[in-house]
Length: 72
Image 1: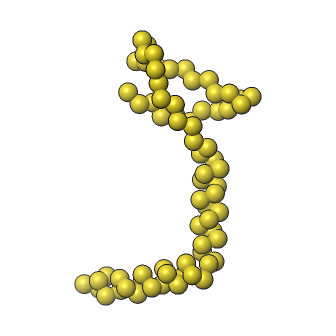
Image 2 (image 1 turned 30 degrees about the vertical axis):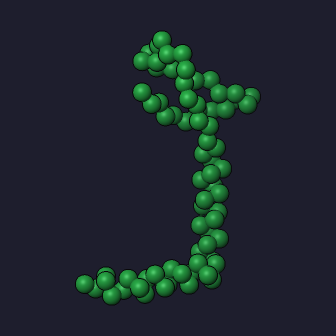
């Protein structure tokens, strides 16, 4: 069984109450991912890309390349 849930960090600790289906289990794999910073970082990078001349040029080139196939 996989349990994926967002938890709140308090005093640099996370308390996880496991569901009843985990009773008797002695080992778990825990993955910690900083969701907030990751999303904010991606949004920031996308925002920067929208003003990047090389990125805009690449998007225009791909758009032009697919223009013919889009008409088919």
